[in-house]
Image 1 (cartoon, rainbow, N blue to C red):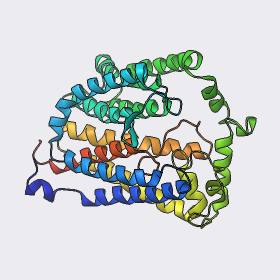
Image 2: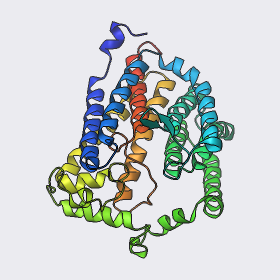
Image 3: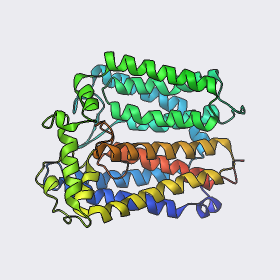
Amino acid sequence: MLDRIHLREIDWILIGLLLANAAIGLLLIFSASHISPGAPALKQALWLLIALALMFACLAFDYKLLMTMAPYALILLLFVLGFLLAFGKAKGGAKSWIGLAFMGGQPSEMVKIAVLLLLARVFAEYKRSYVSFGAAAMSAAVALPPIVLVAMQPDMGTAMSILPIWFGCLALAGLNRKTLVILLVAAILLGFFGWNFLLHDYQKVRLRTVLNPTLDPRGAGYHVLQSKIAIGAGGWLGKGFLRGSQSQLRFLPARHTDFVFSVLGEEFGFVGVIIVLGLYFALVLRIFRAVGKTRDRAGLYIIFLVGCMITFPFLVNVFMIIGLFPITGIPIPLLSYGGSSLVSTFLAVGLVLNVKMRRFANV
């Protein structure tokens, strides 16, 4: 539970940066979707309140207690993912949603938190200089089942977003040459298998159009071409709030989700992009700098993996909208529409706050 000492150690700057980025996300979501049915911005605002409440609730429990609960949480979530695969209804082409009143949730987002905590628990007492093959195999046993189940939904974007948590854990623990070679060979074999047996034709076309979107300008290349037009049209200062032609006239697809950063570039221009990038960088930097203040291995792993979890989708999404990465369906945490993503991000930052609050107690 919390006491005065814990409350004094709360990182209010980190909370402020978190809320600032979430507020910018709400602004962009409203601009991109205010003429759309369903009131996405209102739903996102409600999810923001829920996420904030859950984050502060997370602070009431010692992160080491949460680590002990992680295996049970992951098993439960794997069961839910399996149930959705067998009996769920497809939404947007994927069986990944659970209906919650007039909103919906994706259990796969909560899987990230469970995997993160369980990997931190596995390596908290690991004392070797390098990851042994046995330790790497144990970490794979934690990370691969949810990755496979999520990929089968199919939701390749969320499945990919679990990978940096796993790889970040291995990198922090230390990879020797032998283990690294084995992982690279396994990745090549998995890539070959996935291309031939797992990827759908439309996913293969997306990969091919990365090099040349004009190969299919009205199909797989349409998203990237419209995104580049929107960003280029913004110029230095942008066209103004609610005045972006590509977004307001609906030429830009997935405006409030995958391509919300394109809306930012069109309506607020290069200057707006730099400001938002600066705020996001400040948030990520604040998280990674907390690694140096931890006093136990478990806390170190938690904070580092949270940083990886938030940074990876941001970079992938930014590279995606400018045509340097395939369209994967990976939204930007905090900025893109998505209640489950918002909750998982706030909970992840709550874990960072949790570790920093208790760094003098858990040594």
